[in-house]
Amino acid sequence: MARAKRTAAPLQAGTQALKAIHRVFPFSHFIISLMFVAGALALMVFAALELWQGIQPAGDSLASERINAILESIALLTVAVAALELGQTLLEEEVQREAQMSAPTRVRRFLSRFMVVLVVALSIEALVLVFRLGREAPEQLPFAGLIGFMAATLLAAWGVFVRLNRSAEELEPEAMQEAKEEDSKVTQAVQEGD
Image 1: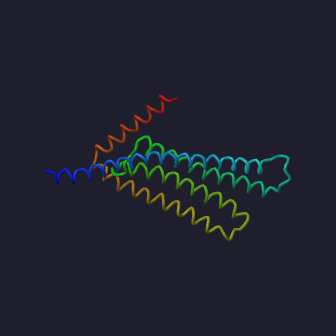
Image 2: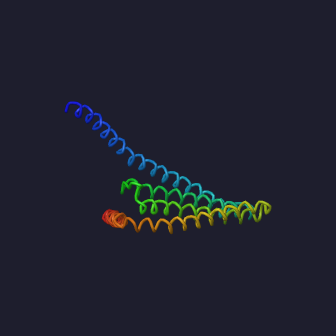
Image 3: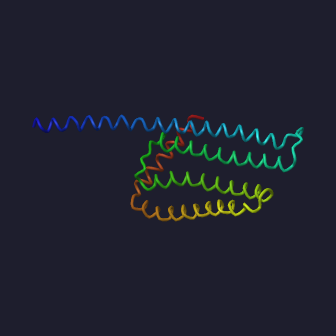
């Protein structure tokens, strides 16, 4: 009996230590989310400065310099949107929901949000590069095409993942129901905050 008590005490201490460590993760995710938002805001400021440089009526810049400034502004805004979306995803999935990535539904939702941002950002970046390189260095156009091809490949791979993941979700319908309930709670909390 005494031996069982001696082995139970370290187990309880270890469990309590793990619980304390697990409480740190949502706070860490919150800080990372804030850093994504701060980075996005800084990029938006730089994008606004680039845009102003491109459209400034009193400037004596050449048309090609103005176009490059506007394209650079678009590229910066694309990265800013990606950073904002990643910050929002972390905030919603890891802080508000404290989601554990064990259920296929949660994994698919988290990866889907990330992949949407990534595919859109790569596609816009490829488009900006095509416009820029088409005028400045046409011999570099295959590299812009390669970025577009990689965006398309990611989109196709994501589609395969979602398709294969659906069958795993059908094995755990209660996980899908839990995720939907969490979504409605988060939506309700956000609406009540407005």
